[in-house]
Every structure is written in C-alpha cells, then in structure tokens.
Length: 139
Image (cartoon, rainbow, N blue to C red; front, side):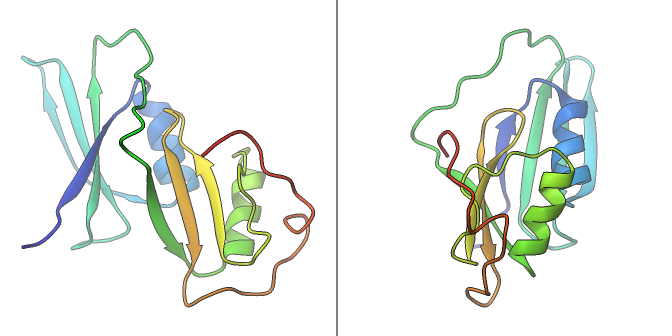
C-alpha cells in the first residue's frame, strides 16, 4: 500500500497557491478542471513521486470552511528551519510557534490549516529572532 494524498478544500484558490507554491515551495504536479461540477483539483508535492496535497476549489463557495478538531496538521521536513522561517517572515507568514528549539515550528495556511515544519536530521542551533519570539494563537 502507498499513501497518495490528503485533500483540503480552499476558499480562495489564488491565495492558497500563493501560500503553498509561492511561500512553502511546493510544486503543482497537475490540475483538473470540472466545469459541470464547478470545481478544480490541484495536486501539490515537494517533487515527482512524493505524497501530495490535493487542493479542492469549489467555484461557488462563498463561506469560509470550518476546520474540525479531528484533523491535526500537515508536516514538512526542511533543510534549515532557521532560514526557512526567516524566508516565511519576509513573505508575511506569521510564525505561530517559532523554532526556539532549532527543531520545530508551526504556521497556518490561508484556510487555517496548521503546518508543522521540522528540521531534517534533528535540531540545529536556534537563532534570533526565534529564540525570543513568543507563541501566537493556536496551531
């Protein structure tokens, strides 16, 4: 058995793509439009052959989707959590749980889904501004 993808519904497709592709660095693997059903499916991954996140965009959705407590978060390993989080800050992404330990951070996508960032290979030396940064909100 092989895990293929997780699906999330997004309210604003362009905003979601800006976040996942533009800020997190995922790649669009494929896209399918379904005019009769009025929805678009976009599959994102870190690269070919990797597990994917399926963004489902329902064209007529007006209200914000609610996030149930039964889903926790997506998790991604990064090569340098300090540099990655610094780039996110430059791109106006709020770091909810900064990598004060040099290992773990949390952010949220535009639809309020938590994203866990983990330092690949174990903790590295934490740096400012993250050492002094407080937690914000929930994740």
